[in-house]
Image (tube, rainbow, N blue to C red; front, top):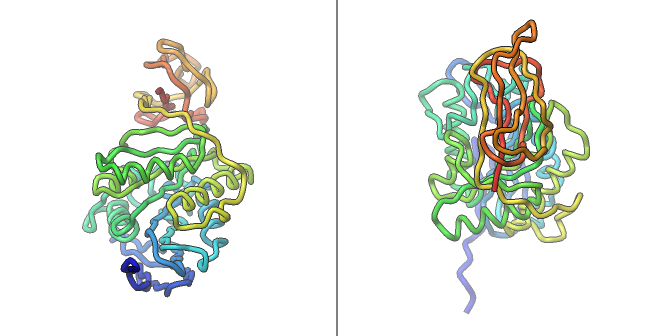
Length: 327
Ligand SMILES: [Zn+2]
């Protein structure tokens, strides 16, 4: 006896509609109150049934590797070989992209990845988060958020996920994160983020981070793109033969993360490099005043590896300095 198979349906998001076997692109206008955002969206509806995958890039507007890699993967994949569907938002924060803005949406000076699940009656970032939450995350079986270091951040490549307590969901997140094949896998929540919003409602979710510093060299774009293709293969929406590009590796598991922030504005003089292993108590750098006098010395609170490092001399009160990940 054959299993019941759901008839293939049209895929519809924000007024765009893709029939089975079709890829559709368009700019979708989102009312943010004080402005209208035009989100470049790609719908790919597979020729066969399967999981629905939501993917975003450019939640932070100056994270170019993620933006370039997502566009490449979804515009190149063959809808006839896709089982399931993809809703991809290629540049999720257009005002931040246009302004080349670090961390913040210039419309309201909010970090879009700290206000999820958003508020449809709130500020510009809260409205944008709410639209993405309702149209790209909700209804997905898997959500992938692509980032890299911001314009002032160097980072080692890593994936992130968190545990929902639902074994099948957590197993899918882990399989997809492992397939992405980056240097580290960080397990833990980030309140207000896309992936935590997804996990909170029981949707498998993975963060991918490759490259940074406002650059988008082919080595990084190719690596992010290849990781995403392997992730889509692992989710069963692409066939194994679609996993092209540079090979992935196995990720070192990290379950602790220490984010260090500056509590003073000044000049940041790090003493360590991204990817370096450090031990608790080790001096990591100083924030100095304009004349070079040390205002703050920063020591490592735990043993671990430097996951990302702010490289700009300019440092502001409240901004991140670096993050350390540990097993
Ligand atoms: Zn980011």
